[in-house]
Length: 125
Image (cartoon, rainbow, N blue to C red; front, side, top):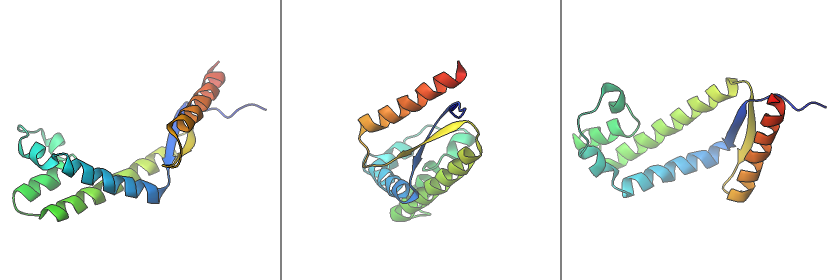
């Protein structure tokens, strides 16, 4: 039997777990000083101003949103972006999906990725 042909790996995280990770990551960013960082940014390009988190914190600094609303907006925008990425990658051909969970050890993940890459190497030979 010939192994399926693929060009790379795609790490898949279950939606509920991914959403929880996004929620916590945004809170850690806020705790780490994101508001002060955005407040002290130099003038940004139009593209950079659209980055998730920048516009929401700038709205907060202008008094248009309260901080909890800005945090929620960042979390929602990040979840929406993750869904768009997921849809895009599902259409991509040639990616070997690897399920990832918080329950997996880093060693298990590394082994799975290297096993997939070894398969990739064999397919390109």
